Image 1: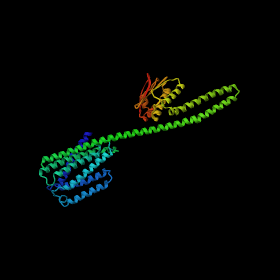
Image 2: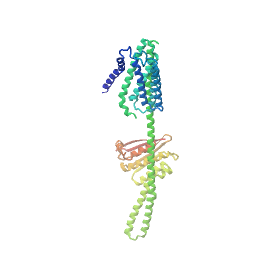
Image 3: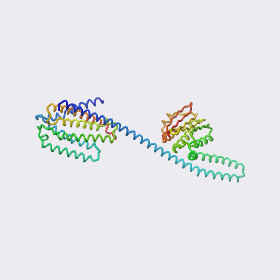
Image 4: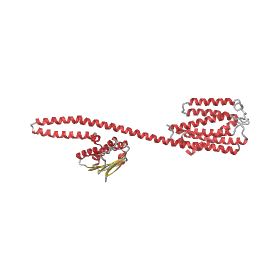
Length: 193
Length: 260
């Protein structure tokens, strides 16, 4: 039964990992690329992750912190309107600055959550805790992602771009794998004290 | 930066993250084990405190009962005895005098029993003269009241002094074990050895040649049986340990060790 569950999950990961790219390709099939959709996808996912951490964190000034981060990201998004990355469907520019800021914030929040887990110590087996996997997935993805955008920016060569996309796919695979584990272990959530 | 450089740096980043997560899990587990241990220690301490409190309450209750028995029932019985004496002087009828004499004997026995019980409940010699004197007193009373052959040995010196609680608990354990031997085992011989190793431990060995009992079965009983649970509780309060060997051939051997 467990093996079957993992097979189903693995299939799910493979499918979901490529799905956003497929949708973007489908929506922008006449466009030379799907960067416009990718930019918006990344920013909306960033806001969603902030909302997730808003629920997960128990720190004192959580409300202020998250709203501050939302405000900063929004400022960067508005700044991106100066370029064509978020308004021109055939854009060839990534919203790199916003990516970096989102990555940085999510890394900080995931480290804060890891610290919170260490302070609480209320989870019986951390490797079977749903939100540990989710947090680890986010941490891995965003550290990897920030590394990509630090080394391979808008002015990357074609070869560097190819590497960046391969690494990005691997990171996505890891992220979705972690999310699946998070779903799988969500059955243990009631056991947490 | 060339392609190889990028691959190397990204691989390094991946290794660092994997290492970080592994370290996080290891550190989390370590901290959790430490927390569990600390909780266990606190729980044990709390249990000991609760146990000590309940034993103190029990002790206080025994004192009250002993005082009431001695001061009120004992006094009433003594007055009754005096009244009987006065009555016997006035009686001329021989039959009635004989009947009264029988009643007086029963009354005297009652007075002695009340004294013995009150003495068992609260040992004045334990407070005044210490553990050895109290055990000797208690065993002498038992010896007089029964046919038991009792042997008590100790290496305690005059200046050997234990903590008040340790003395009280050891005394009560000897009482409990002796009463058990009397009531349940059908023993004819009892041997008590109390040894003191300065700064190390106090060892109490109690032997009886009775019928023995099934230790596992007694432990499995919820009410503990034979006051064994009571003995274990007392030992726990003074951080001691208990080992029991019991069978029909040798009777029962209790070995109590109390660290100093």
